[in-house]
Image 1: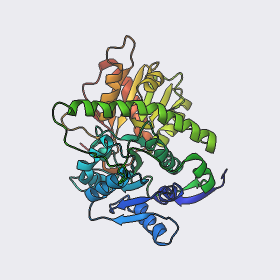
Image 2: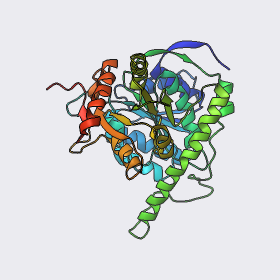
Image 3: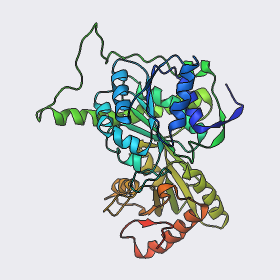
Image 4: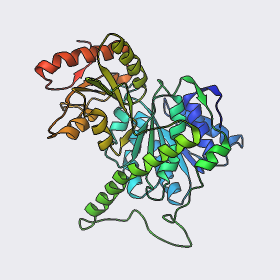
Length: 391
């Protein structure tokens, strides 16, 4: 097992992971801050290091269209995008899950316009929250590499066959150089078998996919897709466990940190989680019972695991990185409040939004959130609060 870390830009690590997975087709269009991923893949193909078809398309809509066609023939398929690129893919994003095409899509998360902003928040992935894709979040470069490999294994599982989005915070992760352990090719081959499925376009066994569905069948088809997505969590957990045994780095759909006796729990997703851990340590040293729960699997939503992780807390401070216009909560907060609605014993849930458009997320922000929770415990919270907003 490879154990020696090397300094590597996270985007390059993702591309190298795709190479290790023997991808067949990459259809791509450049957009900041994901460009380094597909740019490096184009170099690997051109230099003969990756035996794959590289399709330089004219737009992100075409990229996802090409990926759906490629995956539908049984080819292992990858692409990447960000922000407005994901928005341009939107029409095809909703088609991929119901056609059961296990594409892996790396999203270097970036704010949606307007105003134009190339920095990180989670507004792009939240724009396709309900599309039916499996969605996972990485906290650092090692996780980005590992989750790339696992995403192919998860999506191509015969009981799943769904597309997977790997979310890495733009610039905060995508452009940083981190110490990363690169697996050996033999290790990845042992973990990830070649993609084989009978559910594909084949000239020897003709079938049709993506046909018109009228009112008498549309509801049942959409429900079937949702059922598959919900059931996929079982296999996602299995793949996480198998990866941990094979590579020595265990993963869970929900991760916890010093939460067992915590009265206030911070709930986060993505790279800010590591900053939050440091804040928790400092708050603990100051005598405050604060813990952290991080969501690794965003879709399907890990209901049971979050109930277990959060159920004993007095207060849950949900940290969102997307503003839902005209509503009272961010997207993650909506989910958590729904989770505990009507429960006989439930924590108080307060919602805080920060880090929009790449604004720095600091240890002091999490300490401010914890202090604010103590105040809100007495008076309640009518709507989300934006941390660090200029008045």
